[in-house]
Structure formats: structure tokens, C-alpha cells
Length: 351
Ligand code: SF4
Image 1: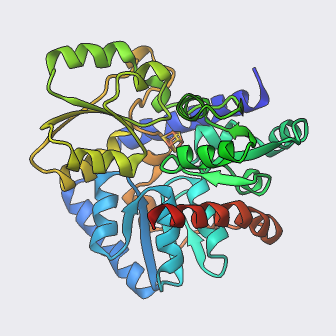
Image 2: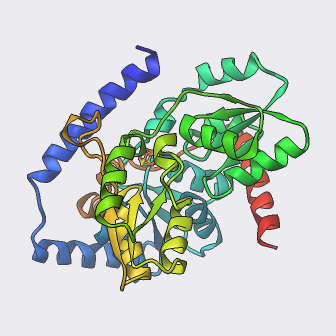
């Protein structure tokens, strides 16, 4: 077992303990109302804004919207936080999202409900091993996914999100560049097949998307032949082959709105159902089957780290000393280079 895999096992156990604890502590509707009122008041007092990812709990997404914050993917969360007038950003998501917000907006205070909320892709790409890997291949452009630490971003030439991964790879391939792709091997494999780019892959994966199973989706398609299959590209190739559309979280939501189908089988974290149902209220959404009880991740189709964002931890977010995001200014400055390159490139696509 590699160091990264050992670390992942330890953290997976911590996450499971957290989920077991959460299962036993369901909030009553009255308690939920109290917490929401408390958080809303503190956001105003502190001139803070809540920025939440699509994979967080519905109550947190609703609270972000009701208090003038945003619910989005990691790139849009960072952009929103950067442009907003608040002094403090409360990032409900996983740690790399808080770090990205801090890199883009170093003058603001960035707090998270818990800094233990991480990501298997980030954990599986420690900077020392990754930097050594890059050093062995100096002829390649280093492209890293947003789901990485600030230090890994600082070592990269490009940062990408799933929404522009194909465009960036095409752009680099057109210029004759060879690529190192990290950390998600499924996304990298998809990009390689779609663009024909020369890609050397880092071996990482998302423990949530990796559990979707092609066989289960094919069985479900037989029951609902009219359903369109929407798949996030962190899923295995066998699952992508069954997709009517492959796309980022935002692209999945757009597809559900635009496509004429009335029913969708969705292969991504089920937190996205809040937005899907909000944006396409007359349509039906079914979560794609996972490996079930035998899976390595007990909380399949529900990221265990995203689930650590709870109303109770959010209610104390201003009062603790263990939940502020700090990024070494030199690392932040270096990471800003590929992040800025991504934002500028994304802006050219919109024109
Ligand atoms: S769903 Fe996967 S990629 Fe997203 S934060 Fe969780 S572990 Fe990371």
C-alpha cells in the first residue's frame, strides 16, 4: 500500500466514524430552524457570505441561496467569493475549495465548517511524490484538476475543472504539447480518448464516482428506456460509455433542463438532486446504482467529506480557532499562475 493509500484508509475510517455519529444525531425541525436563524444572523453581523457546493446537504444549499450566497461548482464558488463584497467567505465544501478561494482572494478571511472535509483525489496526490513525478518528465505540461492542494497547484502549468478539461487538453495538444494529468485517472482517460492528447497519468480516483456500476445502470435503463443517462467524467469508462451526456456538475444540471427527456439516471453525488429538482421541477431523477453494500465506500453516491458540512458545524464557524484556511503566501502566489491561466482561458470560451 502506498503512503497516500494508507493515509486515505485512516481518513476513510475517520469519515465513517463521523457519519455514524451524524446518523445518531438527526436534527428536529425546531432545532434546524434555530440553527438556520442563528447562522443567518451571524452571517449578517460578520459581513460574511455562504458559498456552498452542489454536493452539500439540501439545507445548506437552501441557506446559501436564502442568505444571498451561492450554490455552484468549485470554479464558480471561487469566482463568486472573489467578486462578492463580503469580508469573510464561509466555504461549505471540501478543503481544496477553501484553499482555492483563499488563493484567489488572499485579503479575505476564509472559514469552513470543518477542515477535516477533504477529498480522495487531493489525498491521493501528495506534493512530494507528485513533484518528483513531474521532475522525471520535464518535457510535459503539468495539468492538475482543481481537486488538489495549493502546493500541487503551485507545481502545475494549468489547473482545470471538469467543465473545461477537454478544451484545455485540446488546446495543449493543438500546440504539440505532451501532458502530465493528475490526479483523476478516469477523467484523464476520458480526456485522452476524446482529444487524442498524449497524456501521462497520475493514478488517483474519486471514491464516490468510482463506485458507479455500468451493469446496474444498464439494468435500470431496461426498466426506464426513456431515461437519459447523465454522467460525471470522474466515473469509470464503462459507465461513461452508457452516458447520453458526460459533463461537470453544472453541465449535468444544464443537460437536465435542456434535454426533452422527462426522466434521468444521474451518476454523480446525490447532493446535486437539490438543484436538479429546483431547476427542472417537472422531471424525475434517479440516482445511478453503485456497488452497494460491498463497496469500498459505505456512503456511495454521497461524498462522505461533503457530508461533514452540517448546520451545527456551520453555526459555530465564527467561534472556533481550528477552521480558518491559511495558504502560504509564496505557494498561493505560485498557484495563482495556473489558476489565472484557467480563468483567462475559460473567459475566452465564453466569448
Ligand atoms: S465527490 Fe469525490 S471528487 Fe468530489 S470531493 Fe468527494 S471524494 Fe472528492
